[in-house]
Structures are given as C-alpha cells and as structure tokens.
Image (cartoon, rainbow, N blue to C red; front, side, top):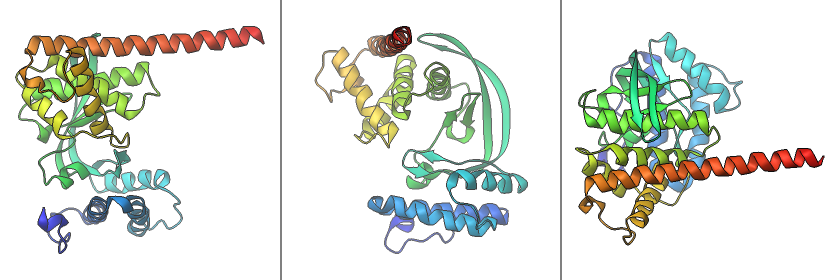
Length: 290
C-alpha cells in the first residue's frame, strides 16, 4: 500500500510484461486510479486527465469523450489479443484485461424461480480492475451481468463447484440478469441491494464471509452502489428480525436469516410490480381523458 499510494509511490514495476499497447493503456489507467483514490475530492479532474492520455495512445486527437474513446480502445486491445471491460464501475473508470473466455450455461435457482443463464468464464488476466488495484489484490470484481450473459472472473474463485462461485457469483449475478430484464431502469445500487439479498438467502457455508463483506463496506453515497446497498441490506434485515440497526447477524440461525432475506426480496419485487402497475393505470387513465 505504501509503495502504491504513499507520498513516494509510483507506477514503476507495477505493470508486468505485456504487449506494448496493452502495457501503456494499463499504466495510464493505474496512474489515474492512484491519483483519484489518493485525492477523492479531485476525482473528476483526474478522470478528465485520463482522456488526453488515451488520445495520445490511440493517435485519435479528434475523440471528444469516453463514450467515443472506449470502442477505439477496445478495438486496439482486441488487435493486440486482449478482451477488455471499460466504463464506470462505481465512482471510477474501469479497465480489466484478459485473454481467455469460455461460454457455458447454468441453471440457477433464485427465490422467485429457476433461470437458465449464459456465463462467459474469463481467465488469463493482465489487469483485474481498479478495486483489485485499490486493495492490492485483497478485494476485486468477481464478475458482472449484461442483458445477454454473465461474465465470471475465474481467478477470483477457488473452484466453480464451491458455494462462493455458486452463490456469490451465479446467484448474485443471475439476479442482476433477471432484474435487468424485468426492471430495466433500476439504479445500480438497487440492483446490488436485491442481488445481495439473494446471496444471503442462499449462503450457508459462506454466510459469515458474505456478512463480513457487507459489514466492512457500508456507505451513504449512491455513487458507490455496493457500499450504499450493503448498509441498506443489513438495516432491512435487522428490521425484519426486530433487532437494533447494527446488530450482529452472525448470531441469527442460518435458516431464519435465509428465510428473511428471501422474504425481503419478494416484498421488494411486490412493491416494484405494484408501482409499475399503478404507473401503467395512471398512463391509461390520462390517455382516456384525452
């Protein structure tokens, strides 16, 4: 941490031997992450400084913003033999680089039913993203969901048959997949809120680990959707269990905790459907009045 973020920290030696373009792109992203994490109040300015670096590397001085730049970077990295993830992950611009991916299908049982999910298993990573960088490898993205498939960061898991992968990845991300289909405009923190309830509704061997992660990372800024959701998941379960906020949920019987987490998710779904139905009724009534 001192080598990376201390007053004399630098990027020297932090980027391993890669294809030259991939190495340079990863280096400028890591310099941006280091600056933005070291001075959160200057995060927007540090992000603005990233774009000129990408223009220089791609030779595209005409590109006006990240929306236009990211497809160009993706193409250049693809030509160098790398897949990548870009965009915003929480408060920072993301870059993950890998060289291998394999497509599989899984059947996943959620509190609201069974889903068949397409999963890309990703491996051969050259860069694991800003959260891995920020924690020196102790925490990081385990995967993500799109409207078409899930993407699993295989090095994050001890095995694909273990509960951590089956619950914290497949369960969590399949709930995202289902919610993106049913509730397309849901804010990111609400997606995380529902997916973390799924984890607690299914976790048994890994329950203590899941609760520890929720407790360690709590916040009140929706721009950090995981921390924002974590705090609200723990508060919602404490209310359902008639406990003071901040109570130690490790002491709750595992079956009861699973039951309450599933019940909270179903109640959240019911509220969303009721709101959507009410909005649709209001829209129909307005059209009738016209």
